[in-house]
Image (cartoon, rainbow, N blue to C red; front, side):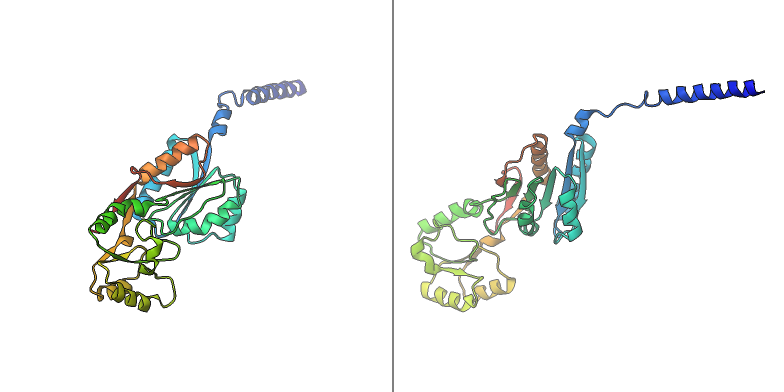
Length: 281
């Protein structure tokens, strides 16, 4: 009986050995190239992002995951980075962090510059009302860029000037009027709406100068625009110029950049294919 038990034991041991030695033979090894080429992306979007943008992000991120070997996380409706989110961004090995939304981009720019091991791509969703500067080598900022409004309105302003029309300008201190439109000798024709008590002085200047146009270069509240209409001078509200971002085109350019494993830091103006411009008539 003991010999029989011994034989059975040997048989069981042999079977176990064969099973163990066979493990893994039919399991494909992970390709090191796949691991090396995998891209990890964090997407952070602002709460006021339009529905077409949200739809584009959702569709594109899933496509990247399924076809481009991109792993992603998406944090939506962000107004500010919490301590937990900050800690996660600093510790998780994201290759790229994509941020969408003008105000959110401005809020996170300083924070992004303190994390040089992450590549950041900021994407504006409306016209930049102030000229941002990017000095950090790990940040690219997709936006309308410097000179955008001058490009959009330069020909019209020139035509008005040629026929002798004059302007009274309204803007803010961070968004200067192009010098070709209002040279330094005409500085008294520019009013800054972010200066305290600016409107009474503006009214006085309009009466003194008798302009043909009141040109609004930076956004004003609707109530202020209504008051300006009472001055009985035609208003051209340049600040109501808007853009619709072609998110499919923009995100394709982001993917191309990620695939090349390079980041062209600094301001990256939208191309004509990436935005559609709407101007007041």
